[in-house]
Image 1 (tube, rainbow, N blue to C red):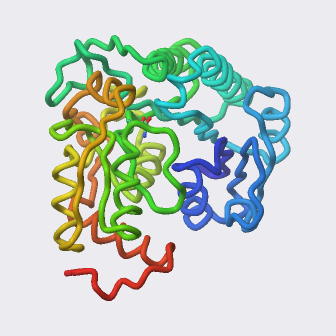
Image 2 (image 1 turned 180 degrees about the vertical axis):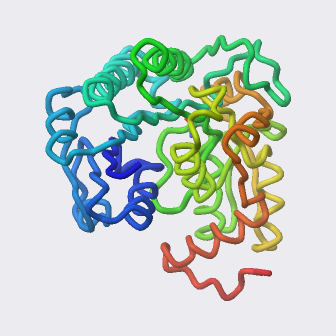
Length: 325
Ligand code: VAH
């Protein structure tokens, strides 16, 4: 990758990936785009930023040509629970946006990344240690578009030679952007509430295991995959990756090590619980490790300490009574 166009730069992944790519590849070599403008955001203020609706293929192509990019990282998307509330809108946005980005990549011979998700698996995929290659019959519109996206990206590679690559992200935990509409977002909300109120009411039931990853590991994975030797890739769209699998009770126990007075109770949201129940308990990421050296650095306790430290600064909350190692 030399010069990169990112769609959805103001989203949960985009807001951190944009900053990291500017650091690693040079501010001038990263063109951040989003459908909205956000006054004061470093994504907007500290480098190239363009307003782009991914439904507008002409404008995407014009920006890619004007900046002479060699890579598109296509992140513009909604998350599972929001998508489930508006399934037809989600299909249109996600699939038309993806086809537009793939067409620009084909037309200009660009490298291409877009994320899939553990949501690409369904109730009859093996639940534990879900293999890289197995049955994928998701029961959410979010999952349906993720499987369709994986197949479309593989098609563009096989049929047109586009260098498409992707990962199936687990739930991503980060502190830069507010949690928004995801099923795994309870694992983000909980840190905010732990600091603000020392208690949390989980909308996901005890014992509901899902794969998770801290955002720094997700950002590392995107860059490592995009820089990997293509001759080593037996898979492309998309690689299983995960750092940990836990349920609400485990993350609560991890927070209690830092905030001993923290307590949690449950008020299960049937919609997001239903989505979570359809996803794997844990996935197997052996192929990502073997084909391009995927190696996460954060486990649950290390993530908890870093999240609480960084969030206490962001929320301007005194961290003196945090028990940190
Ligand atoms: C969501 N955070 O909850 C996203 C992700 C695997 C979960 O796709 O919708």
